Image 1 (spheres, rainbow, N blue to C red):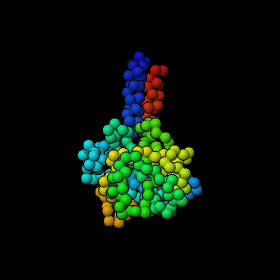
Image 2: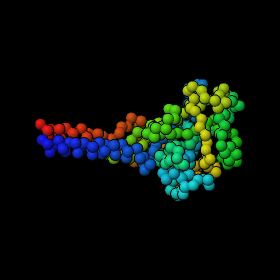
Image 3: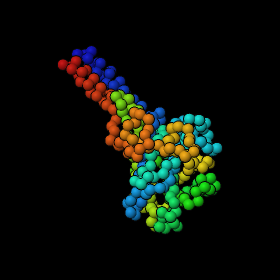
Image 4: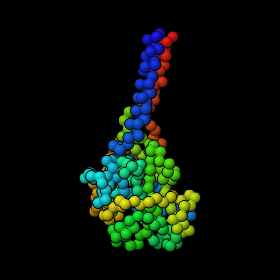
Length: 284
């Protein structure tokens, strides 16, 4: 009994460390493809907004931006920024990897929403003006899109990083599990903008908050780049990525919505109580 008691005392911290290690490893998502399904909604009508351009830009898994100001060394196999157009249901899809920290900031994805000016009923009051690099924005991405206007510039953060950001800007990641292997991640988010005016960029209940553009808005025109950041950019009429529920195979081009009910795996969660029960039996 003394031997078993000793084993219980000695092994229990080890089992706890294994359990904690599992949680740590599960939070290191940078090597897994991340499928983001967004829904763009107008605050005043609660209707989906179709035909809007949504742009993403971010660091790679090593914390580098593809930008002259970045201190990192960007690679050649990651796209770093891309654009999707909301469909008739207001949906956008992006496939990427979770970005790494940059300069001490938690992982985040920058995004910008552009609309055709004719979609707004009050073109002077629904524009969220970026606080940084507005000249860079106008000189590069607006030259060939003169009818487009920015209505929101903001950033997404990740729930597991505990940033304290407001919920409209936080992505909750679900693991896609096949057997015991986590093969991909899925996140779903609704973004609410104001097409009816009355905001002038000021916070309003129900609206997705704006956030700074930052100094790394791409210097290239990426309106024509696709929404799959996990591969090299296609700039000639790209076939936009459309996520479906089967992430075990190559992405389809349907308008299916990713499954948001996928759960975390149970490994170690069952091992720990079973092992403690076994060791406890030795004492009697």
